[in-house]
Image 1 (cartoon, rainbow, N blue to C red):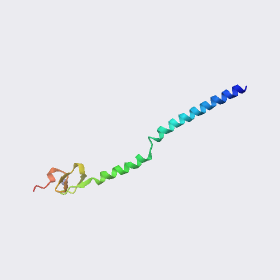
Image 2 (cartoon, rainbow, N blue to C red):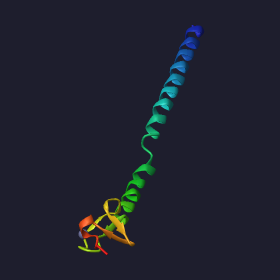
Image 3 (cartoon, rainbow, N blue to C red):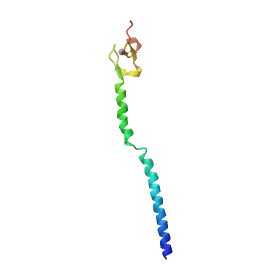
Length: 85
Ligand SMILES: [Zn+2]
């Protein structure tokens, strides 16, 4: 009888260890895709976009710096607004 009890204990221990290994492998991927750092970086990435907004020297319209024309340290929304000197 003691052999059966021992066998049951070994099987229970094996299942217990297996469950712990499965729980560890499950908790590790759930931790990696949900870092709170990436959520906090989103507002930071939006701020540079608003800072990159420039104003046309001719019509005073605001536009992204990447779309603006820089002439003589002045930004212009289009080539038509660049004064001819
Ligand atoms: Zn303009």
